[in-house]
Image (cartoon, rainbow, N blue to C red; front, side, top):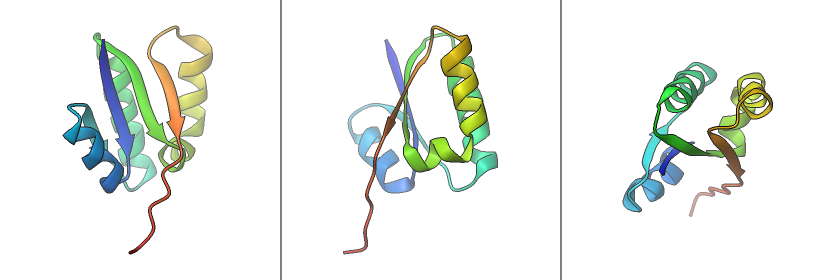
Length: 83
């Protein structure tokens, strides 16, 4: 089972350290491309997205959730604050 992560840079870096393929996105275009790539991958079972990344492509996320059995899309809250 393969996991993908679509998120901000800090969250994506953390998932990469855990061995998960992760893409950092900043805008709707990047998020849409990353989601299409992940969802189009034959071995992708789970896509973890931050709420912010999912909000950029809400229609695409909802379409995948409603019309397909796989991949499962899980939205997480990532509270990145300056330290």
